[in-house]
Amino acid sequence: MKPAAWVLLGWVLSGKSFQGEAQPHIECYEEDGPHPELEQEHKFTPADLFNISIKIVEIQGMCNFNITWILNADASIKYLKATKICEFNQGCIRCDYSEAFQRQTMSEHQKWQFNFVGFSVEENTNYFIDAYNLPPANIDEDHSKIQKQLTSPDCEDNSLKYCQNCIEKGSLWDPNITICNRKFELEVNFTPSNFCSKYKIHLCDSHKCDNSILHVVPTTKGNSIRVSEKIRMNDQERNVIFKELIPYFPGCQNDCKRYSYYQTVCNEEPIPEPKATASIVNKPDMKKTYAGISITLLLIVCIVAAVLYFKSKHGLARNLAHFYPITAQKPITILVVYSQEACLQHTVLNFADFLQEYCHCNVIIDLWQKRRIAEIGPVQWLATQKGIADKVIFLCPTYSSALCDSTCKSIIENQKNSECMFTLALHFFCSDWKMDSSLCKYMVVSFNETHPDPVLPSPLSICPNYFLMKDIDSFCRDLSFSQSQRYKAAKKWTWKFKIRPGLQL
Image (tube, rainbow, N blue to C red; front, side, top):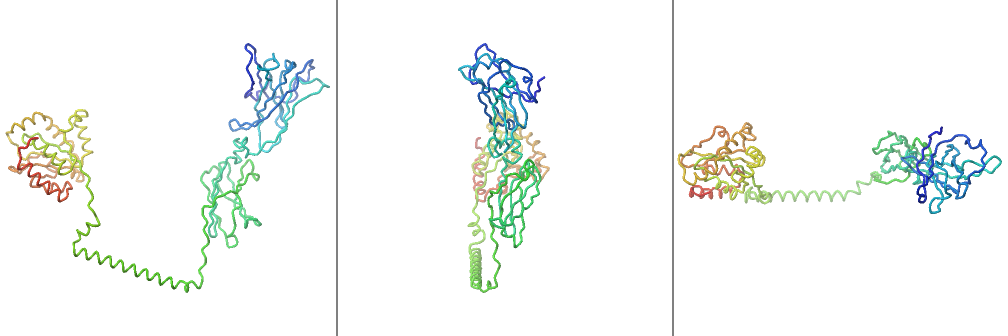
């Protein structure tokens, strides 16, 4: 039974096959000792191999020889049964042909060609490879074979540097060495390899390196963090220089590649020692320093005097205006919730227009968002506006009148859901009124000059209440208006709501 130590990785045909003919392929396996054909005498034997070529290939981290051989194109090819390939240190491989050869060549008169991948490759190693066809020549006949001798390159060569055994010797490792020279200290930084846990730093007293110092670096295998080794030096060693970094990989130990290239990231020169004559030399410099300090103090005194003069002449507020200019205030957003009362409806839109036009606020009322309320529902709409609004104003009647004019009645008929929205908002927001920090967000506004006592639902009694126009100043102040804005707002609001109370919506 044939052992399956090697498996065929590929064989090459340099042309087109003939239709209907069975094409030979090879099956390769290890064969130790002499082949059985030596015990037999053969009437006809095949010719020698025409040529053999060898290359190094890397497959899944393993480096092997790719051996390709070409058969002679003569009639003896029909007696060929196998080809045997041996490496002096790794044994022999036998490749049997599955079919007898029916033709001397492949299509287009090209010679038969096969290949096998096997025999591991190490760096800087001599290899002796023999190849011959079976059955061999009989006893007392010439046994011809092709011999190849080659030496593999080192791990720096592209054909080997990506192989696992070379990677474990540092073929892909870049230590990225940086040096920092300080007074009585040399700092060496480098990136360790995952396959090495022992390093030494080679130092020299000069470029000729008459005296060498080997500094051992303690590291941990697999540590990918940069190593920073600070080497302290005495007076005699202060001029030592970095020579090279020596790694000790398990696969090469003392014969590993050494790294001497580095970059200097800092170079601090020693600070000269102070001399006894320094005090004499520095006397003129001290006079200049005292003169500078005196001038600086004089300037500070002048500035302080100027500030005090302007303060007494023009007042503190006017002076501060030069240093702190008034910045533009960001408009606030106000949600207006109103009650369905007969004579209150005609003021809702005028009140909203007033907040927008003269108070420069963003106003939200349900009258302007009917479609949105219908899409998401009143509860979700109130929850959304609660997060947007800076202030929530409840418009409440001061006195419940029995009769309304025709304009108010028509509005009531079109706004049947306003009382539902008012009641819903009352219950939705009342949970915030338990905390003082949230209570300042809510305001109650009512205006009726005939009956100044407001009619409020009991939950609203805890909120700040403003009677307009009497409380216009405090109302505007709590909305963070400036003094000029309050004056204009009070004047316009008096004209709009007091002089023209019947203005239509």
